[in-house]
Structures are given as structure tokens and as C-alpha cells.
Length: 152
Ligand code: HEM
Image (tube, rainbow, N blue to C red; front, side, top):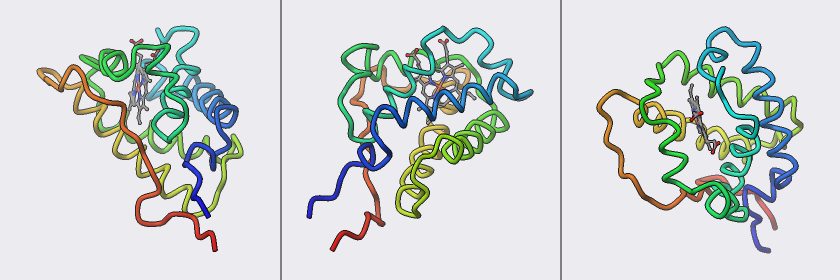
């Protein structure tokens, strides 16, 4: 049996759209994150959903329509994300996954939070003063890691 992508397991694009809708509604109410995202554009949450979809093995929509890795990187350069902001982002997206009805099985959540830990730490490092990350690279593709779903 073929193991599905994390993207398909999550519920595909509609599930990730629900996730970022819930997440950014919370961000707007959050004293730590609201100032960071005050000037986000009207399509920010859809673009982040498209990024996540591509990372988790879905179609390369972010690369095709929003500029791929170089664009994603450029949005974080110079933001000077603090550890408090990063940690809040990570905790809030995990909590939003519950409210958005993403799968709650151990395998999915393990893969999901592993990417979120990795991605938020990278975003923070790239956003630091004087950071010089590679300007071009492929979009990461995140799989199941050590614990894929058991499909007999
Ligand atoms: C896994 C972690 C993360 C992912 C997947 C992610 C994803 C993205 C993407 C795809 C964009 C560009 C949206 C577009 O094309 O319009 C973006 C922009 C942005 N991100 Fe992140 N991000 C992450 C972590 C963070 C963290 C931890 C912060 C701050 C606490 C942050 C703050 C921002 C801000 C403020 C923008 C908009 C900047 C602008 O308007 O140019 N991000 N993010």
C-alpha cells in the first residue's frame, strides 16, 4: 500500500486553508503576534496555506504563483523575529490545527509539529540582523519522518 503524502493525509488544500484562517484570526487577537502581522497583505493567509501544501507534498502552487523559496525568504528577511514570537507562532499553529479539524493522529501531528519547529527556527534565524541565508533554494519537502502511518 502506498503511504499518502502528509498533504493528502491532512485533507489537502481545503484543510490547510481552514488552518491558516483559524491561525490568522487568532494572530489578530494576540498581543505578541498582532504587532508583527499588523501590515500583512489581504492574501497572506492563503499564500501561507499554499506554502504549507507544497512543503507537505502537495502541488507546487507557491512556487508557481507566489515566487517560491526566494519570495518566502524575502518576506522574513529583516523581521528580527524574537524567540517569544517564534514560540508563540509555533504553539498557536498547533492549537489552530485542533480548531481547524486537522487529523489528530500521532503520526500526522508528529510530522506537522516537526516541520513547524524546523520552519519557525529557520524563519527566526533568517530574519535576524545580518543574516545571509542562501537567496535561492528548493522549497523543502516534508515527509513522515520516523513514524509513517501504519498501513498493513
Ligand atoms: C514554519 C514557519 C513559517 C512559515 C511556513 C511561514 C510562511 C510564510 C510565508 C509563505 C510568507 C509569505 C506570504 C506571501 O507570499 O504573501 C510569510 C510571510 C511572513 N511571515 Fe512567515 N512563516 C513562518 C514563520 C514565521 C514566524 C515565526 C514569524 C514571526 C513571528 C513570521 C512572520 C511573517 C511575516 C510578518 C510575514 C509577512 C512579511 C511581509 O508582509 O512581507 N513567519 N511567512
